Length: 508
Image 1 (cartoon, rainbow, N blue to C red):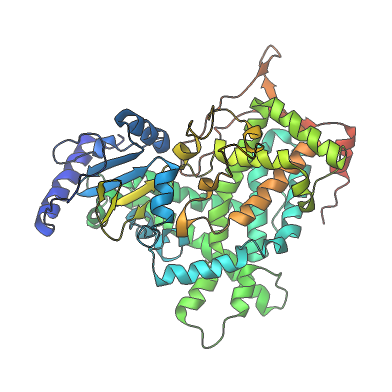
Image 2 (cartoon, rainbow, N blue to C red):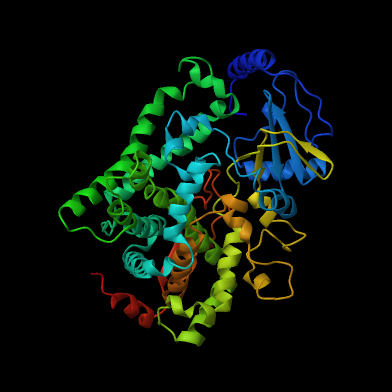
């Protein structure tokens, strides 16, 4: 654990006192799911992983021989679902009581993200209202409206990769940022190093810091009332800076949209559309939603979508046979050097299998955001108390060897056999009513990126000092949106024909 003993002692002591004063113990009618034995006072607090939680929860389940793991710490119950069946049975089939969110106070209060970040909303009227408005702009039947925006950002990506391929990680992030900012606000970003993207990245970094250094506030909620110098409460000292960056990321692009509308020069965007729909009868909440909801598109896509495409590059370098087969399919169907478009998706089944396998092999969100159970529940003879936290271990689900043979390997062909047990890795987008509402847009962006990159580029391992291939390690980061650890590779045009196809692009 990253907590110091003084922090643990202070948190445990305060927690036990409050727990005994304000709660009554109750004996569950059935046993809790299996879990590791806890310590006096702090329970399983030291069993909570702070790095690669999805891997450690998977290992913990294997050690106790259960796909459901129960931990209890400082009066809080946590249940981790390591199997698709358990996740579907509870988060899908019983979604009415498994769709709430706990108050992750480091985010919701210290950063004030709970007032406008949709994924953090508790389940209720506000969430339904905002989710309906969000989904209206991103549902599968309407995302074709954004194909021109996605194509423009993709063209810039190809040109950037041709010019400075060594900066591919930055270029991929730029492409996703350009797409989402244009859709949300109509912003025409700079080809490289755009300040809007830089600001958003800096703001999102505050969320990651809160998830790490502010973890204790989520486990011991009343800790938020203690001063920053109290052991364990140090994140409060920096929270105001992170909050200011987040609010700036939310408000500055919207102010630009408002000015453009007033001057009759606004580009079509979700923010512009929502603002135009406001009237004198609009409530304060509706006005705030028009200002804050569009920022969720960027916040919800920049890391997850960008890391997915970065994982694709890693997979192509490590598994050249998959790269070759996908390129052969593109060449045979469309012709060498031809840039695929959205209308070509159904004609390229292996390429679609590559994307399926990408979502399974390196899911951008390997651990679902915790749910909060709103009623007592019983499942497979185990008792789940109301108020307990429930986490879906997406990584463990998509790496289950009973469903996916050799799960650590990148094998797109597993999705070509219609009789195979492996189907579309839906778990990558979540479960139930909290499933990612922007999944159709994310699919389009990633599909176009990998299709066109494969059509014109080849991906090779970097070389060591002796000129020999030095493949990168198959390693991923430990943060919430997990992507490859920084790595080097060679990206170069497949041929002069492919190079000319990129040079012929018109970047208006």
